[in-house]
Length: 116
Length: 111
Figure: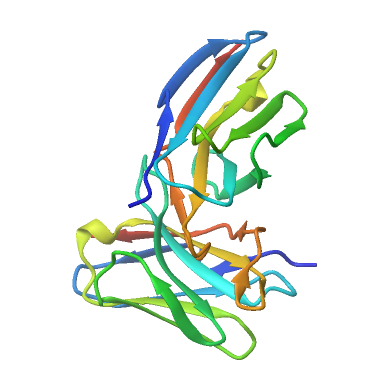
């Protein structure tokens, strides 16, 4: 049983470019959350997707957008990249029951984004 | 606004010693998580604490939760070098949709 997978592992982009990161949740999970972790800091919640809709959003600008597909996989898109967007981007998967998020949250290996 | 504070932020200790990491949070929450992160790696789940007085142990690590004091502790017994990592606590928001994280405790255990 594959756990949470993310691609790519590493990415180098130039300021102003756009990037797409991908996440496949753990088998049986239907909810995907995205976090940004800057070096030396704790993760910051970007948003959560459930039933192909953004269910909640953290304090991130509209340059950050996402999508969830019918197979529960998800994408994170970041437009107009800034140097400050350099970070580890983590995807977490969980199972929502009756609309409530289950307590188990599994994290993927992350995508290291470097903006130059 | 839910805030999470960990202390200490950095801890250097000798093998064989005991120590405790503290996690305080500002408002009520249903769930408290402890994660471990090795350099350049993702987050590994250690414990999920769901009720007042909950205590969980795995090997040399033991976590406890006091919801009235809004405090969780991660106790390390007879530390070994392999436990060197950064430890994060996280608390779920009232909707349980997002986790609010502490800044992490970087633990270095010297032989």
